[in-house]
Length: 86
Picture 1 (cartoon, rainbow, N blue to C red):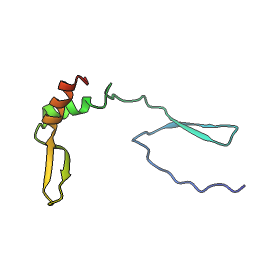
Picture 2 (tube, rainbow, N blue to C red; picture 1 turned 60 degrees about the vertical axis):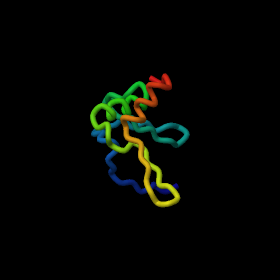
Picture 3 (cartoon, rainbow, N blue to C red; picture 1 turned 90 degrees about the horizontal axis):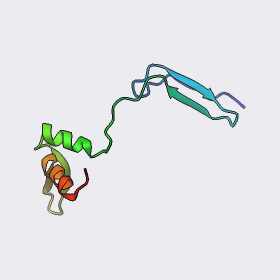
Picture 4 (spheres, rainbow, N blue to C red; picture 1 turned 180 degrees about the vertical axis):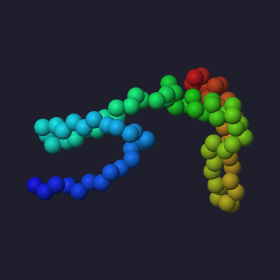
């Protein structure tokens, strides 16, 4: 079996990683840096951006006539709160 060519690659800003070579031939890379903050729910980011830039487009759709309708973060955030998804 020939060696697979490899090159250096930046992965998510991680500067160091441990390498585990398994008996089945797989290789596992693990960051030596702790995982940074992340929200408990993905929609928590929506709350954040609705507060910071409430008029920024969150989702948009182009209609048959070519006109674009958009929903700003403020509207999507309030819909989420009304639905009880906190």
